[in-house]
Amino acid sequence: MNPVALDGDAVRGLLRKVAAGLVQHREEIGGLDAKVGDGDLGITVELMAKALFRFAESTEEADLGRLLAQCGMAVNRANPSTFATVMASGLLGGGRAVMGKTSAAIDDWVAIGEAAIEGIKNRGKASVGDKTLLDALVPAVTALKAERVKGSNERTAMWAAVQACEDGMKATVGMVAKFGKARVFQERSMGVQDGGATAVYYMVQAAAEYIDSTSMSCEGACTTRPLWW
Image (cartoon, rainbow, N blue to C red):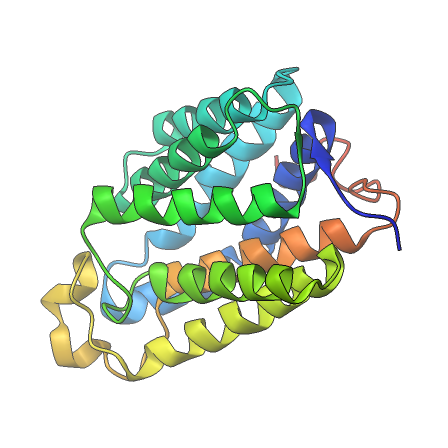
């Protein structure tokens, strides 16, 4: 199986795929948020998805670092919510890890993920176990790195990341929220899966599906303006 490296065109296709995945699950994400807050996370992820799609359609940037940084700024402009802000920080951090590069292999994917985590931590001040998106993202990046060390191919590594991300997402059910609007409810948040972690899971899943595509395209549905636009 040939190695997979992502250039600017591929990253744009991946962003479209991730956008479609977020929109597909926005009601589920909003429903989870409504159990411990006002439910506006569903609206947030839809606005974020539209920002991702609009950005992917409008840019021809080849430098992956600048591309991710510009994407982060586009997400931040689209919605001032906490979730969008920390995701934007993750994109900005990830961009710094590959600044000047026009192609990203699996080692770069790990570097992007680790830098994104640091950007999110610095912005949001949360840690693993605080019932946030980090509880899904950190296990995903850790699994990706472990598979890289084992010498797994990119597709195998990404699906291992998806599984770890799912496990981390589900683990938030037993956690008490310490950040965001859900922290106000404290014990009431116990037993509810975190909406932010759920959004991250669907983003990682969409990325794996994209990378798993042998054509490295978004299989038609994401290369034209979708119905939800």
